[in-house]
Each structure stands twice: as C-alpha cells, then as structure tokens.
Image (cartoon, rainbow, N blue to C red; front, side):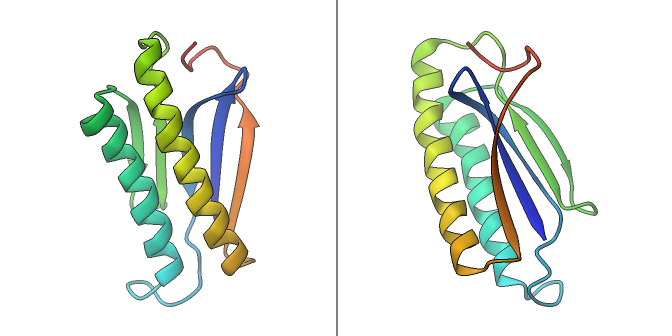
Length: 118
C-alpha cells in the first residue's frame, strides 16, 4: 500500500510524504503507483519551478519514498500559491484512494515540529 501524508501547521499545508508501493500490479505496470507518482512529482515540480519555492526533498526509488517540505520562512504569497498545489494534490490522491481502496491511503496530519512555514 502507498501511504501519502500531507502535513499541516496551524491549518496551512507545509509538505507531504509518499511512501510504499501500491501493490496493485507488477512493478512497471502498476497504474495506481504510476498515478500517485505523477501527482506527487507534479506537485514537487509546481512548487519548485512554477511557484519558485526551494523545498527540501528526500527520495528513494527503492523504498518508494518522496518527501517534500516547504522552507520555514517563505513569503506569504508563495505559501498561498503552494496551498493551491497541495490542495489539488490532496484532491487527486483522495480520488485515487476512493477508486482503489486498499492500495492508497491518504492522511492529513498536523506537523508538530517547527520545520514548516508560517
């Protein structure tokens, strides 16, 4: 199962962590894993290249891990733009989770450490 956790700090999305392999099909033909990867990679690209936020990224293809954390002191207008991307990510992931129950789990979690913006 793939688990995607979206982090919030005081109600503001400040990053996400996707981990695990969906297990819907064999490696290389797993459409659920491909869909999650497409959404999370697009969110990362949008944050970095469109909004221009220098996010902290951890990834491991072997472990099926992608973690993206917004910097602590980013401008408010960029954080507002990031919210649109991260809410869109959440919406897309929830749709996949509904269509493929048991393969994708989406969690929203309050970030208790002081690493997220705002």
